[in-house]
Amino acid sequence: MNNLRVPPWDATALSPWEISQAMTLLLRRLDTIEAHCDGSFPLFSRDGQHWKTSAGGSWMGGFWAGCWGLRALISRSTADRDKALALCAALTDKLHIDTLNRSLIFWYGPALCGRWLVDNSALDLADQAAAAIASGFDHRLGYLPLGCAMGGGADGGQRLSVDSLAATVQLLGGVSHASHQDAARAHTDALIAACFTANGACSAEAWSTQQQNSQQVILQALDRPGGWSRGQAWAMLGLRHAARRWGSPYLDYARAACVYWRRSRRTPYPADRPERSDSLSDPSATLIAAIAMLSLSELLDDGDNWRTYAAQQIAALVRSSYFVRRDGAAHAGAFIGACYRTSAAGCELVESPWSSFFLLEALCMLAGLIDGEEQGTQSHSMNPADD
Image 1: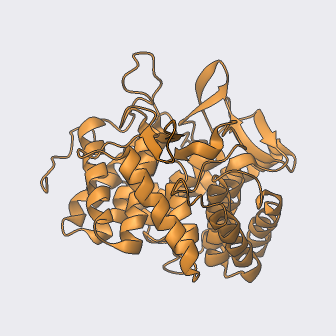
Image 2: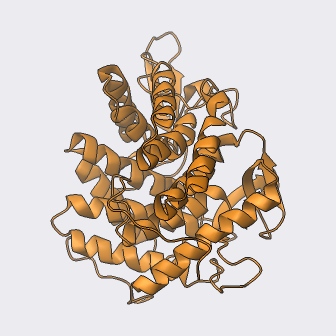
Image 3: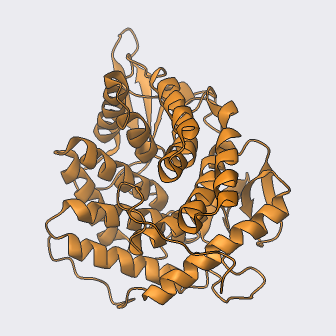
């Protein structure tokens, strides 16, 4: 297990120049997206020009704020800082929406921007979100239910979802309130018990039912373990952060989930649903998985192996047609690599703030600007307007 062979699809990591160039294109792209969205939060674009937007940002609003937070961290521009913090403040209305996906909103927005930009208002907003989310812990079920809003549906109060695991662990596990940390850990344990398998594959959702004529609650997975690429990647990232917070056995779970990824996803462009012959690829899943492996490498004795593998996956995406890297091209800096359900008709490959955020974050990690805990590691200035 310690000597997994790196597949032959790519043998070279990105050069420092390639990392810098890709980051510059992504950071410039934020201005273009902002111009198309007329002050609203971007959700997704099929063509890089026409955007589906939201006044409140839906579950993606934190990622849009996070993109500007990373830009401000890099540029040290007052205007970028003000933009990032204004976007964080605009998320306040999401504090009490009935969805666990609030953790995505407030971790990738106010929590990270508050840390990167040393802003107490953003950090206070993140703390408020942690308290609101922790208060929703269902002691009968033993976890934090997904909730009914933002697509959770009428049965959202009985559903357990992997998507927000990493954000929940970090948002609740990093505060001083023991009850918040206990809720995050119990939630993680419930997900592992219901969704995690011995070979490292993880289901994306579980459902609680109460046995007839009994008070016993049964929690069971709703989908095939490992059957959704992005769900497996979310599990990898969440378990990695659980390992950092609580050590064993979460480190073993995280490693097993990453090993399963390497065995089951042989290219950087995995199918969204591998069991379906008509499935689109989902490069964004690779980004999340690569970030999980990069940050997990800091905790493993054979971490160099994992870092090399993750860096090669990121390089393949940056050099692919999913990322428009030609400076001066109409959509330069667009990452059209998120497999997303845009309507009842099905999924499409789109550009989105969350996939762009993860690409930018991965590049910042390779450049040494942030670490596996998403902390800034050094001062750096790179004006997005410069050549």
